[in-house]
Length: 304
Ligand SMILES: [Fe+2]
Ligand SMILES: [Fe+2]
Image (cartoon, rainbow, N blue to C red; front, side, top):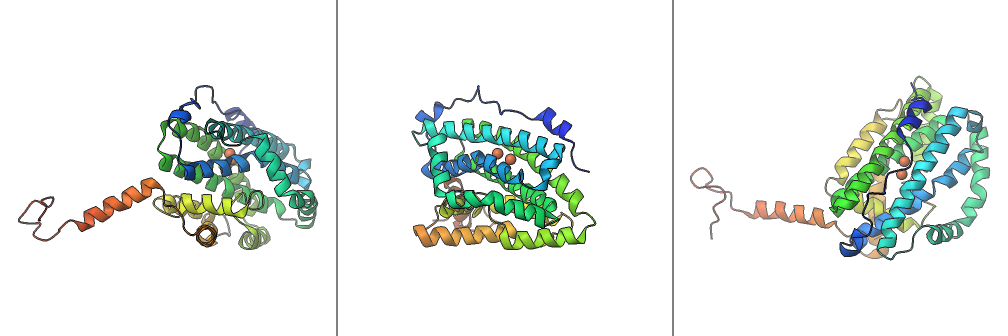
C-alpha cells in the first residue's frame, strides 16, 4: 500500500541547519575529492525542480496526491542543495545560482526538449508511473548510500551531522517511491517488463546529463568503488531485486564499473579515499605479521 501523503507531509519540511557550524570548514577544510562529490550532490539536489517540471507534463498532474508529493519532495531537495552550497561557499568554491546558471547552459539542448520527451513518454507508455516510481526509489536509495559513504570517508563531525539529517529525508523519499512502485508493479507483468526494459537500457546514476558525465562518474566510482561502498551498493541491489519482477538487474554495480573505467580513461587514475587506504594498509600490515608458531608464542610477538 502506497504511503499516504498525509504521513509524508507530517514528517518533512526544511532541513534544520541553524545549528550547523558551516564556518568550521574554514579551519578544518574537507579534502578536494570530498568537496568534488559535494559539488556534484549540490548540483543534482538543486536540479530536482527541473525533474519536477518534466513530471508535471505527464498525466500524473491529474492526481493531487502525486502533485502534493512532488511539491513537498522538491522543497526538501531544494534545502539539501542549499545546505551543500553553504559548505562549498565556506571553501570559497562557487555555489548556488552561478553554478546552476552554468548547468542550465551546459545542458540547454536537453532541457529544451525534455518536457516534450516526458510528455510523449507519459502519454505513450501506459506503465510510465511504475517506471518513474521505481526510478525514483533507486535514485533515492543510491543518494542515501552516497551520503552515508561520504560521511564515513570525510570523517568530519559537522559534515556527518548535516549528512545524517539529509539521509533521514532521503530515506523517507525512498520509502514513498518504493511503496508506490511496489503497488504498481505487483501482479502487473506488463508494468514489470516495461520498467525492467527501461531500467536496463536507460538507467544511469542520477546527474547523468545534468552535469558533465565525468563528475557523475567520479562521485559514483570514488564513493562506491572501494571499501564498504560496495557493501552499501549490495544493499541497494537487494532492495531493487525485492521489487516485483525486477530481480537480477545489477544496475548500480555495472554503473560503478563503467564509472571507474571512465575516470581512469579521462584522468589517469581514481583516487582511493584516505579512510579506505588506511584500512587496506592495516589489513596489509596484519597479513605481513608472522603467523607461524602461534601455539607456542604470543601471536603479536614480532620475530626479527
Ligand atoms: Fe536530497
Ligand atoms: Fe531525496
